Image (cartoon, rainbow, N blue to C red; front, side, top):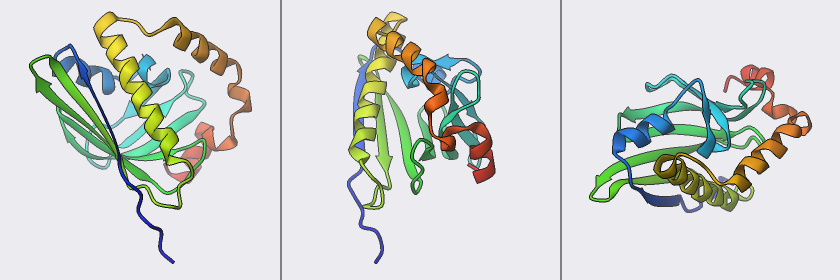
Amino acid sequence: MSPSSLPDHVCSIIIHVPVDDVWSEITKTGSVQRPLYNTVLDIDLEPGGKLRYASPDGKRVFVAGEVLEVDAPRLLKHTYIFAMKPEPATVVTWQLEEVAEGTKVTITHAGWTDEHTAPEKHEAGWTEILGLLKSELEFGDIPTKTKVIYWMQGLFMFALPKTTKAEYVDEQGW
C-alpha cells in the first residue's frame, strides 16, 4: 500500500526589516544562525546544490537536503531530511514577500505522508524559528531563555544519535 499524503505545514510572520536582510540571514553561511537552532548553514545556493544545517563545530548535522529552486532574494526551496530521525525527504520552501511593514516570511513544509512520525513537531519548530528570526532581525538578539537552552543542548551533543554524525551523513550521501 502506498503512503497517504498529509497536509502541508504553512507558517508566516511579518518581520519589520527589508527582504534583503531576511534573505541574508536565512542564507548566511560560515557563522551561527541563532534563529535556526544555533546551527551553521553549509549550502551551494543553486539547484542541485547540497544543504546542511550543522553544529558550530561541524561534527553533527541536523538537517540535510538538496537545493531545488532559488530566486534570490525571494525564494529558497530545498529537500529536507531530519538527521535525528531519518525518514523520507520532505520539501521546505522559504518565500519572502515585500510588504508595507517590511517582509512577510512564509515557510511551507510539504511532502508529508503517513510514513512520517510526528510531523506536527516540525510545524511547531518552524513557528519557533520564525519568531526567533523576527527577534534576531528586529532587535539583534534572541531571548535569554533560548540561549540557555542552546548552551544546555551543546553539553549533550555526545548523546545524540549516530545519524547526526557528519561522517554518517556523508556515507548516506545527504
